[in-house]
Image (cartoon, rainbow over all chains, first blue to last red; front, side):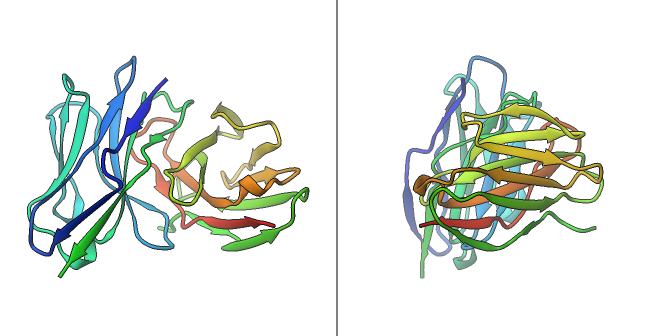
Length: 114
Length: 113
């Protein structure tokens, strides 16, 4: 079985400051890792994904994440946030086979303060 | 290229009723997954359909069922609705079963009274 823990339910940060959203996972098999963003009253949009290869993954809107196998982490970072980044962020894991779907964390609400 | 669409947007039902939610997958995608997102929670995997067959299922009872049609659109049916079924239901489509990327629709908000 797989699980995802997002350590912070809310992260307030000032505009133009850096931010890190934390994600830890557990799985008995190799995993694929994802970060999704959800704006109010909308579906999920993929920010970035780790499938294999380089452990530093760059995504859309200036976000990046680093896969750390030894610490079973996949933290999301952005060097300078904007008001428009205010949203709910979800970390997800998959074994890749498809039959077990994506397992999501409970989400982190990123609040950008002017 | 048309994205994933879902209908209806909102729905209100009473306990014990049945509901059908619909999803049109992105052009060229043959795999559809359904998720339930309760308020304040992350989405939970209900099941996946690949080429009209159920390909995998999460921890949901049999009263949650689905269909996939030859054009790869999909339905989620829920029988004997319970109050706890109130949630946002998300459909996601992908190319084949692999997780290169799942494209999510905007969801259907179901309220059970």
